Image 1 (tube, rainbow, N blue to C red):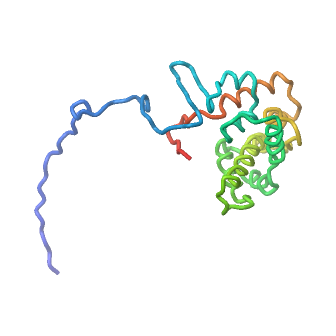
Image 2: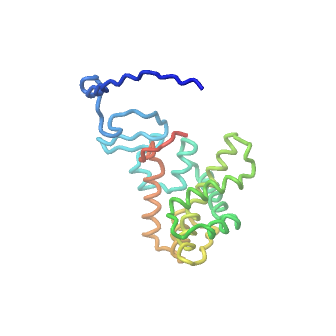
Length: 218
């Protein structure tokens, strides 16, 4: 067997140049960094201004509802009364989770956080898509309706399941905020509390980009 000896020369590593010397800008986090453009949300933190498709958030919080704001974000315009009634009915009709999804939730460790369960069950719901190969705007809109309707049911169902209780089924009527509080507490909320949650949902309906570091533009 032949043996080869290869000489190895060791050199001292050169220190990396300081960022200032390399003329590289230093920023704190993502401050002043343009990540992408949004035609949906216009946010000016310095002026304290937030609009969805040109509609001021203060007006939406004062006069609108989550359902109406969701329609605005999906379609770019505020709905007519008939359109609002239609989207509200669509959300009401899609709040109940499939029985097999509830069974899966019962199999999860009760130490799982609500966010972990939400992530897992949202992924599971994709298996129940009636037309998974259809990527048309109409099909995607249907997915948006079903997912938006199901999120509150997932969160409240897990709160009961992890505490050894039976989930509270959604009501066939009422808006998103009222239904969420009913499913969470097992009783109808008062108007003040329901309105407070509805306003919070409007305010958080769209924040231009996710506030976490791992956002991914859709």
